[in-house]
Image (cartoon, rainbow, N blue to C red):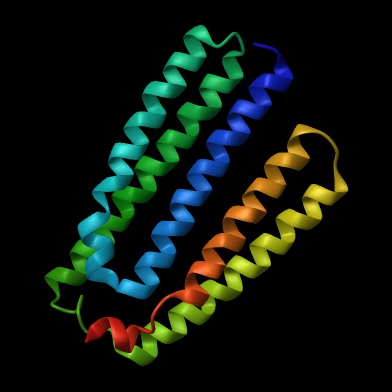
Length: 163
């Protein structure tokens, strides 16, 4: 595999991981921490798939750095999933998992929207400032963040979901 093709492959993997993480964050902000805890094991599955993919790319992809970068990404997904499950499990043990008021949830959603906009703009600016495959990857990440922002805009309010 050529270096440019390897960059494109890794860029696609990164866009997919960012998209999945942003989707999970948006849904968690809207649905609440109990929803996030119930679905946190998804990170272990995604991390395991990325790990197998990374090892395969490392051994057979022709660009060892591609496999190692994917293995590193898998490790970060697994670590973040573990930390999320542990933190939410501790909150659940305290009996505070369902005590998130509509006001707090609305505040979380506002901050999530702001983060998605800032991140999307940063990746757009980065994509405009460089050429080639990396530019397309940055535009892809900006598009994923923008779609998640749109999802938050179109989501029902926390009060509606609670009913």
